[in-house]
Every structure is written in structure tokens, then in C-alpha cells.
Length: 418
Ligand SMILES: O=C(O)C1=C[C@@H](OP(=O)(O)O)[C@@H](O)[C@H](O)C1
Ligand SMILES: C=C(OP(=O)(O)O)C(=O)O
Image 1 (tube, rainbow, N blue to C red):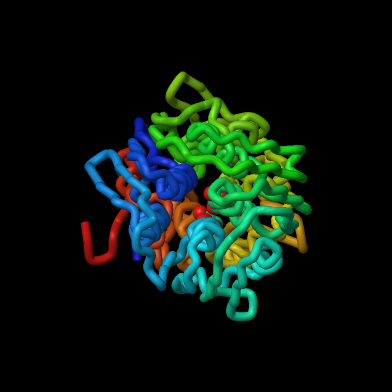
Image 2 (image 1 turned 90 degrees about the horizontal axis):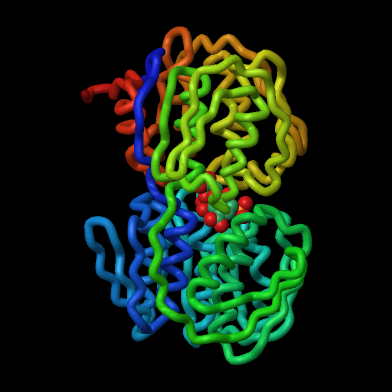
């Protein structure tokens, strides 16, 4: 158990690197037989899970203090892979592992075993791959080998499979065309296309509805991973409601989906300063906001404390998919945040966050990293502090979250610890 006490926060932190960019970089590097160098990679659990898959595919991987080097040799591929709890990892690597002519099992643990993967079956079947799932959930048995051609993808639950398919189809012999219906989380596809572009691959994207891919030998990837906007959201909101915070290592022009936080903060009337490599927020009177999160679902837990401190109710649209993340985030946000005095209501696809008196108390993260971090931010501006059960899950995306909170003078007490 950890407790976050009411605190006036101030200071500067360097935000941790993006796990979305890191995992894509590892996947792409694993398909290139020259040395790729990835600087400032994320050390989150999810990123490490993806690196493990790459090792299992036979790539040579060298880890240094602040970089990872990968030579993707595709020598001996293992038969069993485990993605732990990383959704991107299982949905991105399934099409990539289909490139091998071998029977492979890919699975995960805990929450990942309850996350849908059935949307990959039909589109891969059209491209010569047989997938067997556990009624639409992991484990997945893959019988390759992937070939190019025409296929159709349903993007209404996740964009992550499309990311993997786009990457994998650069490594077959034939040209490919993918028709995509109802694509959600579109900026994440831009991240994929951007990274592929850096290896010399240009994929034609017609309005996120049709993608044309031509096979190509990839050039090695040499990148420095950007700071993570999804992590930064929690700290920027903390500054806006509870003190003054500067978050460094952020690219204000980033293509990351959760850069949307800037619009939400501006809409809410927050004081924001944007520099070349940092963003700063300062305690402000919060109005309210209205936002559609179809393309940036991860932002939702981080903006709950902002809505709760608003003068009027805030509205969040496009939330239906939050039910398929590490926890059912719709249910978790309503039930756990009500325990500390935050009132939230939801219907099938929208949510209202009411101005609330955040008294504090005890709540459970349900092992969802973003719920744990949002509860912590509420603790800072609560009357009595917030005790968070199952707080260690923050390592899924932001392993040093509580250390950073302390650096910002947040009062954090670990039960039985320091
Ligand atoms: O591609 C990615 O890096 C991600 C895409 C999003 O998933 P969906 O496409 O399932 O919305 C997001 O929620 C996830 O945390 C990371
Ligand atoms: C949903 C998330 O990640 P993933 O889907 O990769 O598990 C997340 O980080 O909030």
C-alpha cells in the first residue's frame, strides 16, 4: 500500500521515454539485419516484454545504460513467447511472428489474458496464416507463413494489430493492400508510419481507410526515443491543480496521441508555458472540458483529477473501448474514485466528471497503472490523502512515477517502507 498526502508540488522532472515508440523501434529493428541503435529507450515492463520477444526471434540484442542495439538476424526462433501484460506487444508481434514458417504460441499473463485478440484471425487467414485463439483471447497459436495480398481489418477495438500488420507486410514478397473499417487510435498509426519512414519504407495511407505496402529491405533504425506524453499527462495535471510543475524531455510538436492533453489544459483555462523541450503548468482556476477520446484513449484516467477540480462538469466522449484496457477502466474509474469522493457517471460511450470534494480514503488500482497514477494525483489535492492498493503496477509504463512525484515535493508514504 502507498499513501499520497495533500501536498503543494513544485519543481522540474525529466519525463520517461515513450513505451509506444520504444516497442515499435524494437519490432522494426528486429526485421533489419544491420545494427539499429535506439537511444533513451523506455525501461517500462511493456518495453522489456517486447525486447524479450525480439531476443526470442533470434536477434542480437545489446543493452547499455541509455541505449539498446539490435541486429535482427532471424536465426533461431523460439516456439513460445510471453508478452506479460502488454497489449501492443501481443497484437503487434502476432503478425510479425507470422513471418516464420513455424508453429508458434504467443500469450501473456493476468489482464492480457482477458484482452480481445480475435480481430486478428480473419485478416491473417486471408494472408495465409492460421491463428487459433482461446475464444478470442490469448493464448494464440500461429501457423505461418504470412504472404502479401489484399485483406480487411476492423479497427474499432484496437489499432495495435494494424501497426503490427503494416510492419510485417514490408517483409513479404508481394505488394499488399489493407482496407480498414472504423479505425480508432489513429495517431498511433502515424507513429508506426513515421518510424517505418526512417528505415526507408513509405506506406501509402489513404485517409486511414486503405493502406498500400510494398516490400522493402529495411535500413537500420537510429533514433532517440521521445519523452512519453501519456506519463507526462499525470504530472502536467498535478501542476495545474496542485502547484507548479515543469516537465522536460517533451517534444511539444510530438505526434503522440496524448499530446491532446495540451488542448484539454488550454480548454480548462490552465496556465501553460511551452518551451522547445519542456511544458510547464501552474495552479489555475479550472473551468471544465469536453473531449472525444476515440483517438487518445489512454488520456482518460489522467484527466479525471482535472475534471474533479473543475468549476462545472466535464464531458468525455468515445469511452466505450476503455472497457478493454488493463482493467475495465469505465467501471474502475467510477467505483474506485467514488471511494475518495470523486463523482463520475457514464453511459455506453460517454462519461461525466463532476466537480467534487476530494476527501480521500482508500482505493484500489485494480492493477491498472493508469488508475494508480490518477489516484495518486487526486491524493495531492485531497483533504486526507489517498491510500492506493496495488500501486506497483505503475512499472507497466512509468516505473519511477512515485520517485518523480517525490522529486516534485509530493508527500508519498510507502507502508512498511520509507
Ligand atoms: O499502439 C500503441 O502504442 C497503443 C495504442 C493504443 O491502443 P489501442 O489501439 O488499442 O487503442 C493505446 O491505448 C495503447 O496504450 C498503446
Ligand atoms: C492500454 C495500454 O497499453 P497496452 O494496450 O499496450 O497494454 C496503456 O498503456 O494504457
